[in-house]
Amino acid sequence: MRHIPKICTVVLVFMFAGLLPQQVQATCKEKIAELDQRIAGPEVDSNTRQALKMFRDGAATACDQGNDTAAMQQLGMLEMMLPPPQAEVQAQQQADADTLKPLTDEFMTGRWCSMTGEERAELDFSADGTYTPCFPDSMAQDYVCRSSRDQESTTKWVAKHSSAYSIEQDTIVFADRRGRPGMTYKRGRCSQLGR
Image 1 (cartoon, rainbow, N blue to C red):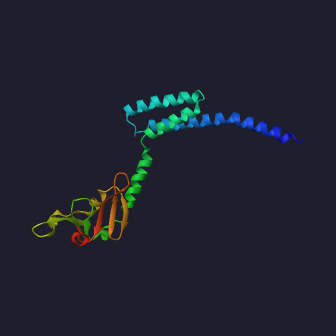
Image 2: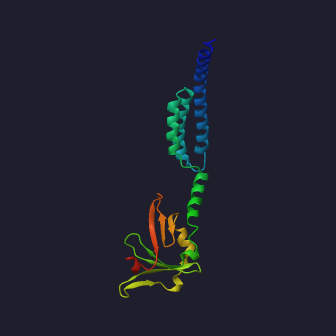
Image 3: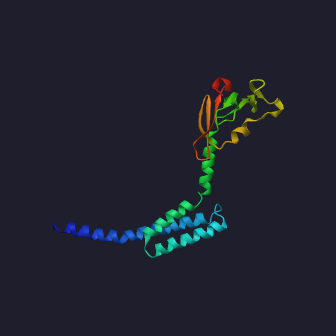
């Protein structure tokens, strides 16, 4: 009677050992099916699709031969080469756009100074949803704004930026292409901000 648990343990080990390769192979085949859908998607052009299919076929052969480790490595590399799914791209674009929502006409009203790089400019935002760019004038020794007919849409100005890195009451930091801090604007006159 004492030996029954040991025998059961041995039997279970052999059963799981037999099932494990089948489970890994099923995972391998599922991954191939998933990547096949992405390769066939509209994000992948025909030339890239041909190159990816060759890579995919090599992984499928390794999977069929039971070399699941190599197949999964190849499939992992293949996945990194694929562009992100369209739904993921759209979700990210929406999330980026949502970061800009606080920049309403009301919030933006007033003077803002560009704090990034050597380019100096003030932007004079109005509550009516327009702004006027202002540039340094050595003769006037101040920032001079363009005429009112040169006003532009605040909404369009905000939309030129893909996302906001941070927004505070008196500071806006837009994100660069890599999601790091980029263009910075501070509320107030540039002369008061050392610009």
